[in-house]
Image (tube, rainbow over all chains, first blue to last red; front, side, top):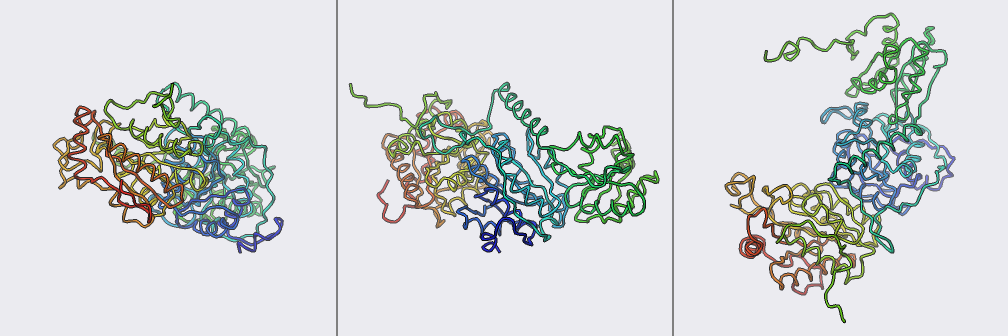
Length: 388
Length: 251
């Protein structure tokens, strides 16, 4: 397939797995270096890269671990290359130290996380339980990745292709946060030509100090005031990113009384739930964050002026829902429905959760429904006073 | 007037932070002289470790990257794969290379990664205040082996050169010291050969320096050098462990 694709006009539609489409899109986005390590359910990305990158003069290298892979990314990014790595949840945990260094040194790179159920070794079925890790930092220190949660193979390809110029422009790592289902499913995809912003030359790269002073790439700063200055500079960049990179999509939200908030593959199911609700005369709509960092707080806050309540749906025990609450700031009730561990909620289940909210009853504790506010197990040892 | 001795161009004018009697300074100079002699300063990229040499990027007058603890060979791999025409070296201590970074060093060597590694073995964690290292000798006292390293509980030191020499991808492996002018001269020949191996594209090269840490060993600088000659060199024999075919000259 790779050889055939290389010869195809860029506007031709092809049927591809999400993982393979991401790999092809990365190459079209200028990625020429890939450092990977096997883990399910993202193996098609390194496999595709291993046969396709040499065709375009690039380098695929299988690292000895996820730890080594992200540090190879660090070196390649420092040398000025467009570089990517991919993994799935447990492997992404192993990359967190490296990501902290990369973010601190303001090096551009792209990282794909095809999330699987956790915690621990977890499972291999789709999940969204790495949202906190992806959007709030993940490793040590004050930093952020730019995070996108695509909801289709086409969107994953488009965002991945663009991610390299975004990373270069902001000098910041970009994460494509998908899940096992997005990586494994096949959909038609069209590789569109990339429009790149004007990017400054990478004068900071460590390419050899030929006719210039040496470049140093480091995140070490023992002087507190100077380290604070670095953090202030990073924070200013994140503010700029919040102003410029917020992306979201809506579906039938214009006249909605009830807003479902979901991202990635979960939003596909939620969209079907909106249609089911509409068929029953319920004015439901969907708000789908595409950029997860920066999160579309302001746009969601405006939705709060219009709807009666929110239902956040995730393949987790409730992570993005905290950002939804931050956006809504108590103006409207924010409910949650989630399944996790690789269980994907059905449109019917989401509809039922929505109907329960509409009937003004707390979600029942059946089949993964979340507890109501303040229902934190009050019978536990610590809740009853611990050693006292 | 003819200038007969000066600072290598590959060293900056920054005064180093190393303790009196520490051999990091000698190793830096050897490395810088070799970079100058080979004329590669402007295409050299160095990767420095977490440890006493963490600030080495202030001392080498070439492009430098600071790696996380143990990961310098992986970072160097990333640089070298992007810039195969450049000279890439990592500079790592024993905690960095032989403890937390064992996977990275073993696999860089196994891949025949075309980089040069300068390995400083002073048998102790220097920067953190003298804790037991993977290379601490049996019976050697450190802050975390106060009665001396007990091999029954803490196991045995790792001989990195011997271990890496078993790997097909390793091209040049040597162990040297800086305890005498003769040893410094041998050490410089080894470093130069390691860089030449990289320049010829022959694969992975590593030079291990038995290095002194008078501060954490609790010795005078002279006693520290004597301890290297008498104790460390007995456990870690000096010499070339692996030399590419046709390049053997005897260090």
